[in-house]
Image (cartoon, rainbow, N blue to C red):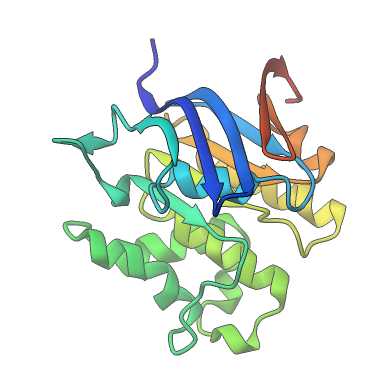
Length: 221
């Protein structure tokens, strides 16, 4: 059986007294999973991703990372995250931004070469020397994806990575992202409101007003 990377049992997240952003939900993410987290804006997708990444703590239930933690502590370099909000460092070039997690992780030889390979995989090699202010919103999102994939993490979380792209380009980018991890046991969770993006993934989870519904249905290729 595949390694369990993330194991959630009745996980809930409440903000203040009145807002239950995530209703109690149980789920597991295993190595090699390809999951689309489908739902409208404001449905709770980002809240769930932040919990899975260990950036936030649940207010109910339990969350663990059996294959990603040591002595109970999550090893963050095992998770690659592409945020929905702008997250590139403005004073660094595109390739330097992609190199950041490689240099933080240490013990990775030729971080520049690895970063360039990640950019090439997403069709971004020609903008490697630009700075974030010179990029379109869509380009910046793709660079964030390259940065998330470059360290070859066990789990990649992408929050609306195609939100500023038209449908044709969005499908191409998701296809390139899947190609970049083809043959590996890296798990991928993509939060999206676009059903055409979800069609690329093997499994679809549906989020609606904080209610997570799991589906084992194969959504596409």
